[in-house]
Length: 153
Ligand SMILES: [Ca+2]
Ligand SMILES: [Ca+2]
Ligand SMILES: [Ca+2]
Image (cartoon, rainbow, N blue to C red; front, side):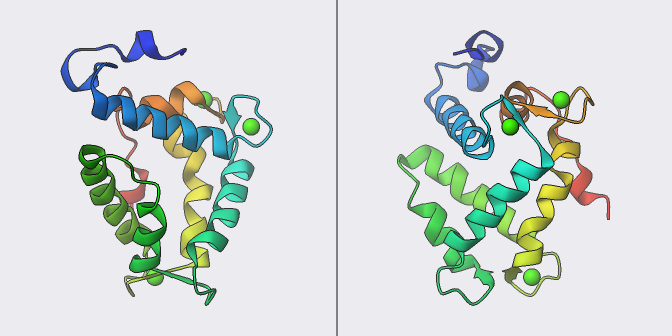
């Protein structure tokens, strides 16, 4: 795996750490799912496509709105082990609240798609307007400092 060298820092960030390993695996799987043409780069368009398809799965009762229950229920099915589950679940809940821009405790289709439009700005570490796998994984594993563009407004 191409990141093993870069990620083998001490402690939590060591690739041997099972929590970290699981996070990296999940981030890699997420990247693969978004990278439709498999060129190792995720564009804004690919991010948008992924979110559009994901919305259909997340909106279980097809009313055009994602509730926290639908969100947790759907993502919960992907959880496998307990320690990462705790971290994942906490992050998932945080993500849901962040997605809910108008604070009505629901995530509309528009709210759900919005992150696609800042996807590149968020993860493009070297400012070449593309998000490589290395940049995406690096952001997930805190190798790169988080770009706090979500809290600007
Ligand atoms: Ca691509
Ligand atoms: Ca909302
Ligand atoms: Ca880049």
